[in-house]
Length: 269
Image 1 (tube, helix red, strand yellow):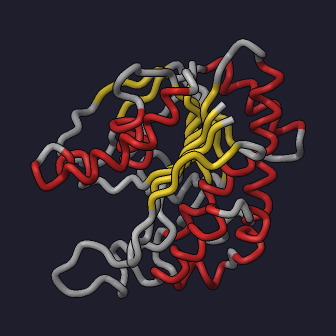
Image 2: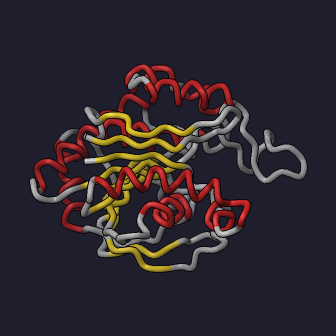
């Protein structure tokens, strides 16, 4: 088993195709190398929708997509054409049932499309040997957000479901998102498209990840802190879900640079 966490900035695929985007390509490639070495059959993607797959009239805090396939991106991702992505529907349905038996109440989604939060990571991590996925939505945008400790527990339930589904199926878990990021809010400076309101919090998150302090990270993640860290800083909750599923794996790669609101991280057995 392997696990990874990466940002899903929509501009990265197009930027990575330019000469000045070599660095972006290499950062994703280092994470992809860890995943590829584990030879997964399926990628379980913890992600937060941006009011594209779901809308405010029907907004789940947690959801498992068990369709036969999803299409995406729903929104604009320069350099990435809309395509269909296969879903391992049987595994997805089993994970849904496992979570319900563990006292979670996710929505079960049988027909869906996805946005850049799924498509951008797959563009970089699922290109060499395209694999089916299981998308797990963790609300990181619309208050009230799920509790951080509860997200760790959700990941543990998902890990149990993976183990009980089939001992022969190799599943890697992936988290998509940033830790401090402001989009469309007052912390975006004039002329910019995004901001990083709390780079110190992003550095703190990466420190916890470096030393395996996942429970401490969940304990420090408060609604007020997430609000200060940006309009989509709740994407950290997807990482906590992944961390709960990846408990026991060893840190294999960590790439964080001062001032950024995200990181590129991977774990292996």
